[in-house]
Length: 138
Image (tube, rainbow, N blue to C red; front, side):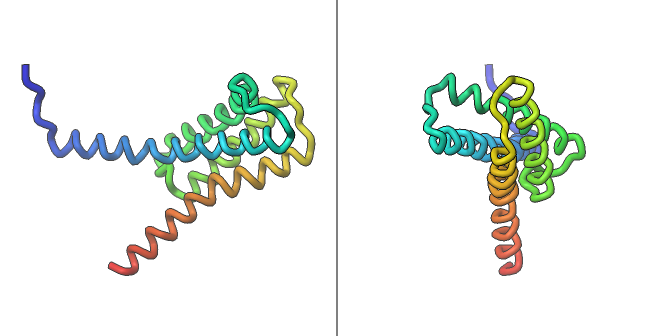
């Protein structure tokens, strides 16, 4: 049995799907880095149960942000999408930590806002700047 030859449409869909996924991977790495840095700075272990316990509220918040961005059909790599994912991850992540009985102090909330803002909006702003510079050279 032979596989059908991909058409231009299926090739485009695969490329678009790949382009849609990489921002999610970058965001997940950013959340993992945020959690790992936070746990290390508070002398907490980087064991898998501890990481997952701290990580899950922020991943849920990020998923809500990604779904929201997809709902309005913005590219996930756009700066405005990063702002949505940032706010969603921060607000939902902190609220879920409260509901789960994990520690939440004002200083933690401030650090979370700043760090996740830099992470989620920052890489997108750099990508946008690079694209703009490359576009102006053409």
